[in-house]
Length: 402
Image (tube, rainbow, N blue to C red; front, side):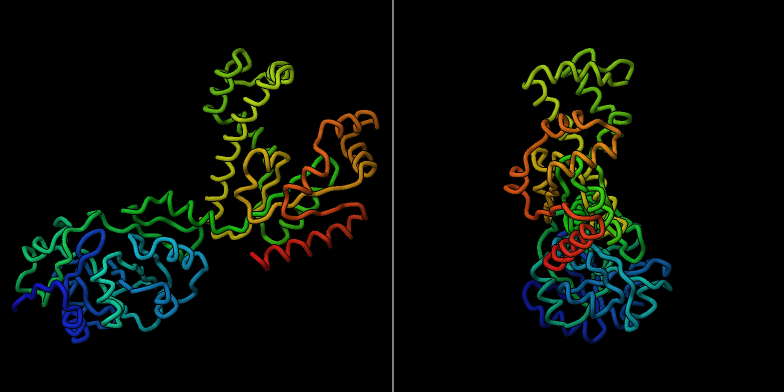
């Protein structure tokens, strides 16, 4: 067999594939050994020529996001989000395989990986041939993955139909594999695309509702309605106190900024309070330190939740806006209530007298602050049932427009 070396004529390569032949193709990672992924005989040739164990499944190269619906079942929204973000590119998305994909491709399993390669010649070929291509790396099993057409010819000259010379591959590492068929989602292979980048991308797809407001306005009730909708609720105040118990980096920063406030790994909150509340500059420094650590912890929680397949989250923070978390939110909801109602609720909830409750409110921001900065406002001046109904109505509106 003469192995053709092609540089331009993708129609010729397409005909080879449509007739059951094998063509080595360039990608942004390494060269792949491609055959018609719907043709059992062509796939069998790939296994034989590579010496690839039959228990190892093959991924399919596809031209675009639409191929997921053509060749896979139960495609989650997260798969489309990742494809829009990273395709063409070094990401293989594992999904439940459709019935038309031969069992040899799946190696007896039920899932298949799809990948859209970021190389113009291979993308042109995929569109020209109209087939999903089974295309593992173009090397004998156990040998180095090839980065040039010359390396492929050294492996398979005279054994395959053609090699498309698309120049040297720029990355030289295989694609990253993520399995979206079960929860939590799993990175099966860390390749050219960092797994943390994928986690960040999924978290950015979440609908994130920020809830803020002063004491006694009813934020807890609003958050409970979001939980009923399946939202992950992150209480930033509780998160901050947990970090003070577990985050050594945060404690070290506080100790460096405010010497003597951390003893034997434990924060002396009274000592810290005496320092910062006597100085606006020190209070500002404390806020910068704590806001940064809380924001990082929130992001980590969101990434974990996104990898579990979550789609809706809420963050409860008095300092939602000043900490910068509001910029991360799909919508920000300021919860307000009349002063008299807030005082009554604080007295009942915290067993405080009227004077102490009033003193607490005087230290908090006015309603105008939230009205000017939040995308939505909820007013809680009626009974609980009416407020719950108002919450449900607003959250439905946000979700429908998200």
